[in-house]
Length: 101
Image (tube, rainbow, N blue to C red):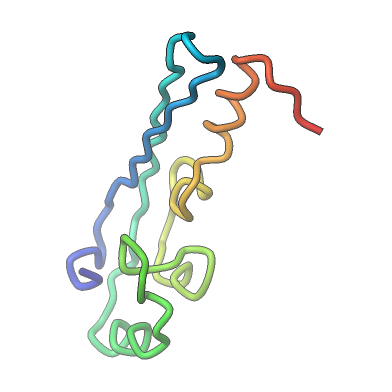
């Protein structure tokens, strides 16, 4: 997977739904983030694989850890790439009258 991501742009998409009150319509939202990987040589890929941090993640890298070194740029929400688009989630809460501390 890292070989296929090397030097390319990919999109991370996360959908969310909030049911504010029983019987109310769902608030639906989607976050899309573009991530451009640097061109990676086989040694760089092997080095990252040897860290083991890729295990158990959907996209084969953890942008919040050493996987960030593989990324050339990101357009959109970094928290979306990590797993939960906080800006989108917060917007849903605000639209539905939730008060945050």
